[in-house]
Length: 153
Image (tube, rainbow, N blue to C red):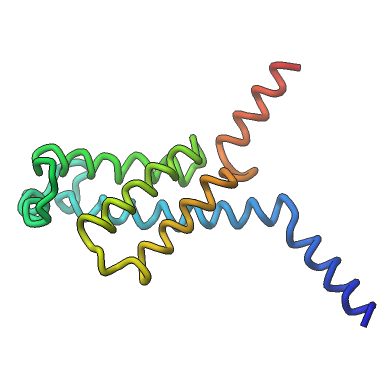
């Protein structure tokens, strides 16, 4: 039995290292960014980058949000393009993940309250992992931190 626990301890030590954690954080960043990137793509005319599909204004009006659709649609579309790029590449990871968490909560409480357990809880969990752990060693944040540390020494 002791031999089995020793093997288990060695395996968990190997899997809980910085490299494995950073791979998991990279996958988490890409998964969360992908959700919002694809959502942003639904708001533009197919074949364009930033030409807003006019039906979005009608949809946002239907949601009955407290801010006018003329403000919310472009703001949401640009946020769903920019923030996923920041998260996926690991630039300002914690702040960017916090922005996606706020977007998730707005979607949860104002647009699709019935989707908490099936969808939004997963998005919130991924964002909270990134907020608490950062982007990992495979991120621009890590490279910038390494560079700044090198300059200080």
